[in-house]
Length: 463
Ligand SMILES: Cc1cc2nc3c(=O)[nH]c(=O)nc-3n(C[C@H](O)[C@H](O)[C@H](O)COP(=O)(O)OP(=O)(O)OC[C@H]3O[C@@H](n4cnc5c(N)ncnc54)[C@H](O)[C@@H]3O)c2cc1C
Image 1: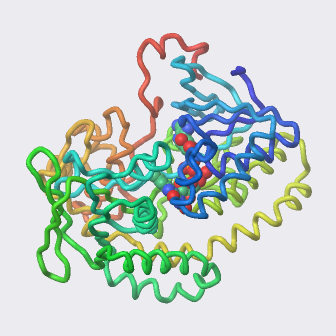
Image 2: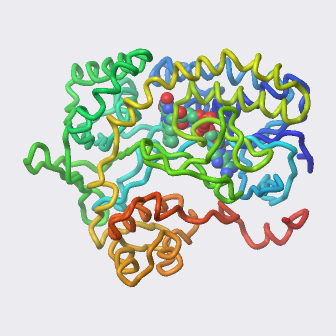
Image 3: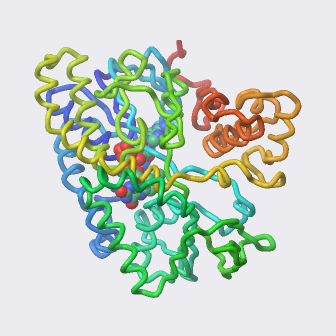
C-alpha cells in the first residue's frame, strides 16, 4: 500500500466498484479498501467464490453483481480486502488497519461508499442468545452457506425480510412464520405514492411474487403484528406477539429481526461532513449534491451510505462519483463529466421512483422506535438501559451527546453504531422534541476498535 493516492474508495459494494472502475479506466492511481475478505458489498457478498447452487437460491438480483466485479478486476485499481478504515478527516487523511498494522494514507480525492447497516431497534428480549438481525442470517448464508437447521421466525419490517424468507424457502429452511410489524395504517399513507412507484413496477411485482410463493409453501405471513417479544431463560425459547389483539407465541430458538436499513455514516460523521435528518428514511445522512460532493472538499459519497436508494441506484451513484473525482482531479472537463453522466443520472432517477412508496409503506412506527421498556438494554456494549437514558433526560441532559457523556451509552467498542439512533429516539420522545433536534452522537476516530500498540506504531501523526 502506498502512502499517497489520487483517489481512495472506501467500500467494495456496487457503488465502490462502479466508482473505482470508472476512475481507474481513465488512468487514475486509485485504491479500493474494504473490511470484508471478498468483493461485492452487502448485496453481492462473496459473488466470486459462491457455489452455483447457492447463487440460484439467492435469486437473479444477486447475479447482477458478476459483470460489475469482472469490470473492476479488469481495471488497474489496487484492491485491499480485510482493510478497515478507522478514521477520515478534512485533510483526506485516511486511517487504515491493514494486515494488523494501523497506518495513515493520503488521498487527493476520497469516495466514501460504505453502504448501509440494519437499523437496530431495542425490544424486550433482543439481547437474548438466539435473537439476531436478519442481515446476519443472510451474511452467513451468502458467505458460508450456513442456514438455520432447526427453524426460524422472521420478524420486523422491510423488503429484506421478505427476500430472506424467500431465499430460505429455496434453501429448504423451515420458516416458522414471518411476523410483519409494519402498521396497517401505513398502507393508506403509502397509497398516494403508488402511481409514481408503478414506474418502477418490477420491484412491486417481485415483492408480490415472493409473497405468493411463500404463501403457497404454507409459510404463515402475519401482518399487523405488535408487541414483539423474545422470551426464554438464558436463550431464546419463544417469540411472543399480538396479532389483531390476540396474544400469540411461537416456540423457536432463532429469531431474525429486520427494521430497515440506515446509512453507514460513521466515517463522514467523524470527518465532520454536514449531515441532515431524513424524515422519510428516518435516519441521518451526509448532505451531498447530485454528484455526491459533501460539505468537505474532496470527500464524495456514493451508494446507500449517502442515503438509502438500493443496489442498482448505488451502482449509478458510484459511476457519477467516479466521474466527479475525474473532474476534480482535472482529468476530464465539466462538460465531459456531464456528458458521460447522462445515462446514469437518468437510470438513477428511474430507479428511485419506488423509494417514496417504500419509505411510507415500511415507515417504522414510533411505538417501536422509542418505547423500549425501562429495563431493556439499549447500548449493548456499555449495558445502558432505556430507563437509565430516560433518567438522564429527567436530570436535565437534553440531547443525545449529553446523555452519552452522562451514561456512557455509545462509548463502547461499537462506538454507538448499535444504539445511536435508538438513544436519539428515546431522548426525543422523553423531551417531546424531534429526533433531528436531539442530534446524533458526535463521530470521533477511531470509528473501529484499535489496540494501543497499533496506534503507537502509526507511520505518521494525524493532523
Ligand atoms: C445486511 C444487509 C443485507 C442486504 N442484503 C441485500 C440484498 O440481499 N439485496 C438487496 O437488494 N439489498 C440488500 N441490502 C441493501 C444493500 O446493501 C444495498 O442496497 C447495496 O448493497 C448498497 O450498495 P453500496 O455499494 O452502497 O454499499 P454496500 O454494498 O453495503 O458496500 C459497502 C462496503 O463498504 C465496506 N465498509 C463499510 N465501512 C467500512 C470501513 N470503515 N472500512 C472498510 N470498509 C468498509 C463494507 O464492508 C461493504 O463491503 C442489504 C443491506 C444490508 C445492511
